[in-house]
Length: 62
Image 1 (cartoon, rainbow, N blue to C red):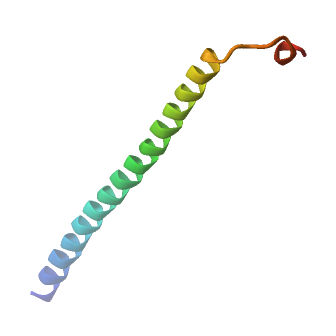
Image 2 (image 1 turned 90 degrees about the horizontal axis):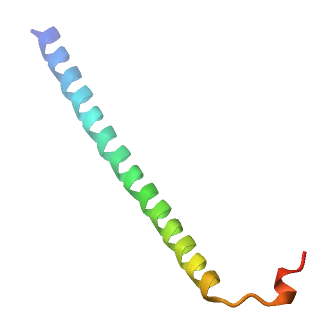
């Protein structure tokens, strides 16, 4: 009887650990994708500002 209880507790803890791990991974992925999205939006904004800004001859010199 003790072995059965130990096995049930083991599997319950295992399943709980897997569910917590999935949740943590999902949250980390969501945060990372948010950072990537903000960086892409910043690049797009910088690109649109650069496209609207006139280029002077002194800026084009190498």
